[in-house]
Length: 117
Image 1 (tube, rainbow, N blue to C red):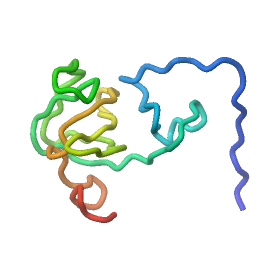
Image 2 (image 1 turned 180 degrees about the vertical axis):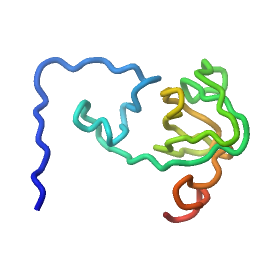
Image 3 (image 1 turned 135 degrees about the vertical axis):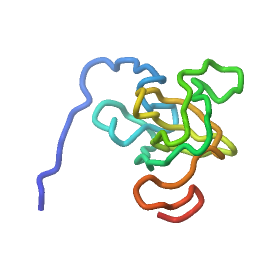
Image 4 (image 1 turned 120 degrees about the vertical axis):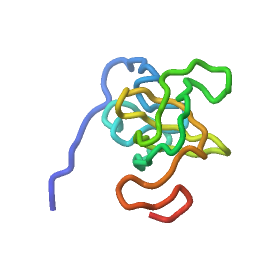
């Protein structure tokens, strides 16, 4: 059995930039588990963008646009709520929200957003 990685939460918490670190009050990217405590963690699902879309800093349609995603770009999906998806645009490193309908096939195995992995 491989040894377990251990870590201790010591010292003051540091504020992470939510546009650069996939951390919200309710959810965090599992890759940040050794840096931040969250009620839930999600493993990213790599998806392909099928239509140009702005990646926004917040859920609201008038929030700041962090970057524009183009067809063929990848998106690391962490959460879908309603018609919005939250995750990481790995090329730019920005974390934000896009319309879920611009997410196409799973970049790894060809599943669409609604298909089981």
